[in-house]
Image (tube, rainbow over all chains, first blue to last red; front, side):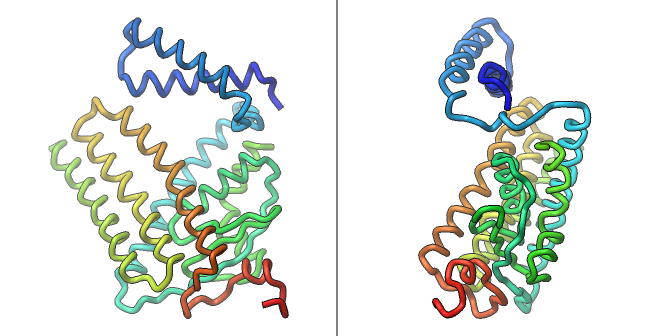
Length: 166
Length: 111
């Protein structure tokens, strides 16, 4: 767990980066108002956010963040093609169902990212989370048992998230 | 040449958006409509924004931010819709093969 000060600094850097990208300029007025707003927001909001609390940045973690983005983009494209094929096929050849998968991730942020990633890849949709069990609506159920479903849906994301979030 | 590439990327994006719209019409129940309608549109939207970025390189930063926000907000809304549907017992289609969430909430005999 990082200290509040470090979390506030992380938040400050993120907010200022977003501000500068949105303004697309580094004139002194823009920069100063950005610094003012980022300071105000990060000091106020740091008490409500634990999004940065569990990340420990190291070269290995950064590598896995990049790998994760790569894996995620690949999955996103592949799954979009799969769903598009299902939609365009003359016989609606779907086998939908809600399966359960177990996650070994402990961090809440990591679980949130895992659920977001699963939901973003078309074909799978997280309906509910109870404890360490995610209930996933799957448009084309290929495995009804938790182990098989976990392997098919979550394993690729989990491998990198478990390194990033320890 | 740049204009042609950008336009083709936007066209590819709109094909996916069309698939999403068609999916909403064709799918048998709410859950599957959420699957196609809200999520097959992610790649479509990203491709359209990418195409715009190719046509107007100066906007790239802002467009990347848009992609970032879509990637974070889209799954939250899909999940909220699906969870609300299941809580309200919106029926699943006849094609459904398994509903483990229902089994977990209502163990056998307690239907």
